Image (cartoon, rainbow, N blue to C red; front, side, top):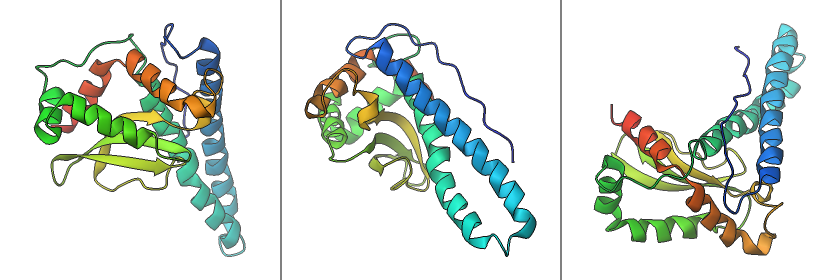
Length: 198
């Protein structure tokens, strides 16, 4: 299996999310890349005698989805900060579809922020279901529990404490959510949505 490479992100100064928090968060992302590659190596080694190593291989394969999604989830997340804060294009297809399904952007935003306040660690996700051609809100526990088949990510916010612990106590994660949206480059999310329409 092909190994993963750590991506580099061009993230400038953010409002309400410190350089220190981004630096530490990127180190955690690097750990997912390292651990995923370690699992690839271990599965390759142990597969030489898959019967003898069946239990260990099973546990490594179980762990694989956590590490794999830890990579991919964070690559979405950090991409939203590249290029600086950019507003949603009100005449664009993403904005129009949000208004069509939720009634207004404001109604959607309130709903999504409520999702992001879900207790526990995980991800709040605005996804697009290829089959039904509609938006789906998803809460993904940890990195991998609750991912939905046929649903692709458009926008996601990391709600693990590590995403904001250097800037806000856990009792103030609502402030982190506000900071996320203040720094969001909507052009990135619009780009993901546009890709899914082809």
